[in-house]
Image 1 (cartoon, rainbow, N blue to C red):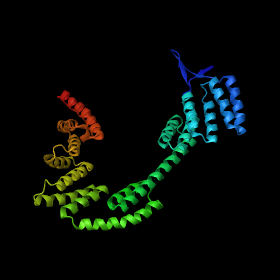
Image 2 (cartoon, rainbow, N blue to C red; image 1 turned 120 degrees about the horizontal axis):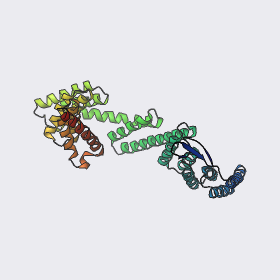
Image 3 (cartoon, helix red, strand yellow; image 1 turned 30 degrees about the horizontal axis):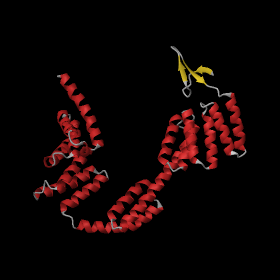
Image 4 (cartoon, rainbow, N blue to C red; image 1 turned 90 degrees about the vertical axis):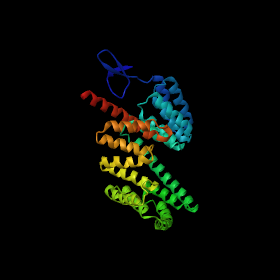
Length: 347
């Protein structure tokens, strides 16, 4: 072998004061067998070429190119399971050999193992982020997955419509629109479902009370990120409910909860605390209200109150809290404990 100065793409050895790389030269015998394999490959004799590359790899397992060339032969023969195996062996031999990732990804793509294919491409791009072949294949696979998902959504929406679940069908089509707005198949399905949905919604809204209508208008404004407008509608709903003695009704709690979310978005932490408290007076273990109030308390520097709400959530059953909320509260607890400790130390 030959020792040269450090290159980040090569294996290295260290001394007490210097770093070096080792450029390991392929064994001549293995290279000679590889050359025979290359000649067979060019002549279209792929099965025979594979045997030569396997012989070369047996003589020198450290050379990834032998496995890569064998994988190329298996691709020509349409045997993607063997191509996958050789691609994996190629990467084992040299994790910095980018073509190995391309070979393995090609096999996985043809085997229909698309998530594993994407993972392999990402690993390869981690080695060489600008590689055009890896970038192109990743883009193609993601586009293929997107189109397949849209098609699946359209099929599901058709089934839901046929079964009379118009609202569910419209919701499914909304998910599909986020992936590929303007897709002809999707637009055709929307044309079928939307008139039925709008007629159903008009009938439903005609039977809603004033507070229910205001609450729904608030929901629409919230989705449009018009938080001030949403607050206005939620406030009208709550005022009407309070006047009719229904301030603790389920719809009132939803309006309080949603208005608290709006207040939080515009950093009106006092409003958030007040509305979350209204919810918690009726539902003391409402996880969403406890977390929002804790965040608002932290926003107004009432750290001990924030810590109390966070601890309440963390003491609840994990299945009720959920992993995302548990992780959020756990992080908040550590941060708040540090803040409280710092404040004590300053006194």
